[in-house]
Length: 64
Image (tube, rainbow, N blue to C red; front, side):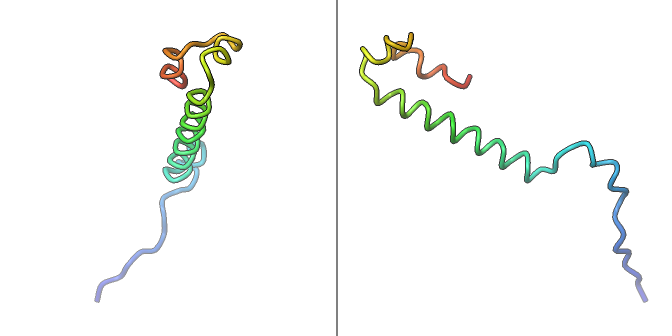
């Protein structure tokens, strides 16, 4: 007969690090916010971009 252990390793080893799913979700949220920002900036005219101190070439650099 085989016994299966259902105990886990000590939780204290991972307590200081967020788990993979949390980090992944945070990364997706950040990527989406940057995508939305670049999309909104792309919709502005050249004059509106100049008013906030940007030009079209700067949009691609947002978030890098």
